[in-house]
Image 1 (tube, helix red, strand yellow):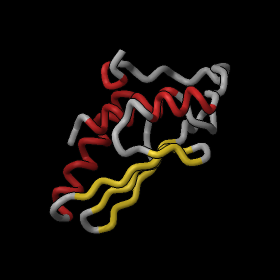
Image 2 (cartoon, helix red, strand yellow):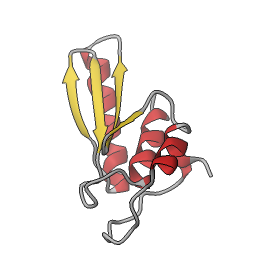
Image 3 (cartoon, helix red, strand yellow):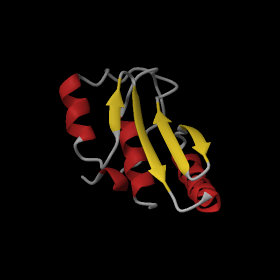
Image 4 (cartoon, one colour):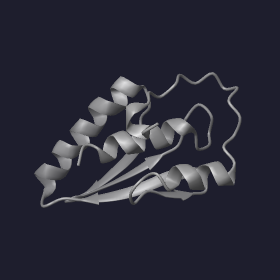
Length: 106
């Protein structure tokens, strides 16, 4: 199933850790995201600061609906997002689902 059509699942703390093969497979279904250690990263570049902030506000709306919130930084026209499942302290399918939903915003 398309990751962007899935829903993030509430943290119950008992889901098994994703293996390296699962992470590579999920990462391959995204565009431009990189799994590094226990985080998923991507930098988006826009024409200016206002456009970057508009994008980040849309990210916030999606994250709130999904109950899964990325870390971010803004550097003028660039938005860097990092995902780490705060409950599980490692990458989870939720990170990849939210990443796909964020990609759909661009």
